[in-house]
Image (cartoon, rainbow, N blue to C red):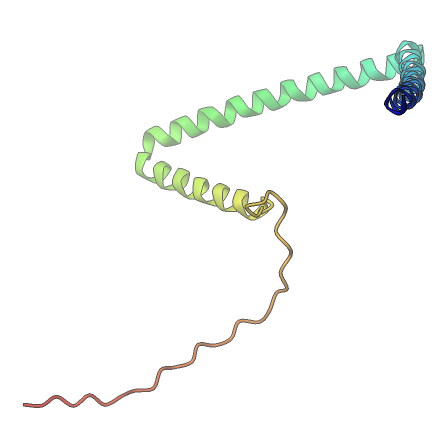
Length: 140
C-alpha cells in the first residue's frame, strides 16, 4: 500500500515536470517563430533589400579586383622563383618558420585537462651565477 502511494506520488511529480518542460519548450518555440518572422520581414523590406543588393554588388566587385591582383602577384612570384630558385626556397622557408612561430604564439595553451593554462606573472630574468673555479691537481 505504501509503495503504491509512493509510485503515484512519483508519477504526479514526473507529470508536473513534463508539463513544465513542455510549457518552456513551447515558450522558446514561439519566441523563435517571432524572431524568424521579424527577420523575414527585414529581408523582404524593400529598403533593406536594396541596401543588401548594393553591398553584395560592391563585395563582388572588390573580390574581382582582389582576384586580379592575386593573379598578377602570382605571376611575379612564379617568374622570380624560376629565375632565383635558391633565394625563393630560402624566403619560403623563412616565411613558413615565421608563420608557424606566430601561429604558436597566438594559440591558447591548454593543460592536459583541456582547460586553459593559468596566466603566469612575468618576472625579470635573473643573471646566471658563475660557477666557482676549482683547481684540479693531477698527480704525475
